[in-house]
Image (cartoon, rainbow, N blue to C red):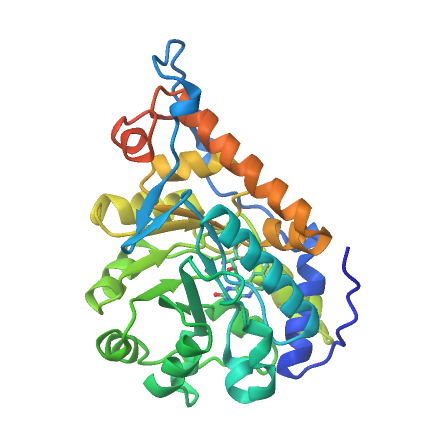
Length: 351
Ligand SMILES: Cc1cc2nc3c(=O)[nH]c(=O)nc-3n(C[C@H](O)[C@H](O)[C@H](O)COP(=O)(O)O)c2cc1C
């Protein structure tokens, strides 16, 4: 296990250290809301007529060939601990041939000497890496040039813009001017040399919002729905004052469950690359999300906790996630992910 010696504080680096420290604890999980995936079951096939060893999890995403439909969701950077975690996560990405997002790189724009905490391309030379920035920063001085800079910093294959209005609202001194961002996102989509992916951070993206983002030119959507890490709770737990603490607790169940986001978006846009994340902890839920239309399934906090323990612990977790997805494919009689998706083997659990 790593020693968490990064100092806390209210500057951007201290905030990043707080986020890591708090997310190592399960106390920051959403309360009173679930992913909604428990409302579905995969129909069992007692005679699969396939050899388990023929089950193949390979997929393509935005033109990249991947070993499995998994994503290491955007998390960290900006501190010594974050650097170690990022490099462990990147090693896992390379080993399992899955993509990885880094955490918000705003800190690297503001303090260039911290850019090396995101340096992972050397350990993950062959997998897609995704740069990351809060979309709201487009209203606080970040422009196309800044985005190009963070993309080139990790030789990224795409830029992820995250939407986090609740987090910014709970955080004292949060960046809360979310006005007129859509035209700026649209301009970025036109001007950047790589695709733009938009994600939430655990409160979900509705079908209506997805329509607007896709119209703006976004290439893929990561729903990051409710049911997993609650950023209201994380910021509430960081709160030095009663106001921030209370806001965080009040909004602990806020957001659209991950499964509801997937259904709404996939029904309207069946060919759009869709990432399921927010509260996924095992491969059976990952398989259900794939059956609901997700191209990839992202995990954040479970992978952070494993990476903090050790590299071996992280590798074991991704290995079992793959085994769980493969078991779901086998026991529904499907050797590949596209066949599994086409098989319509998901049933709603009647209540
Ligand atoms: C420690 C930590 C830091 C995070 N930082 C970012 C970030 O900088 N940018 C971002 O887009 N999402 C960030 N996230 C959100 C995750 O990418 C993800 O959307 C969210 O935690 C829900 O997934 P989970 O339930 O698997 O944790 C962070 C998550 C964690 C746990």
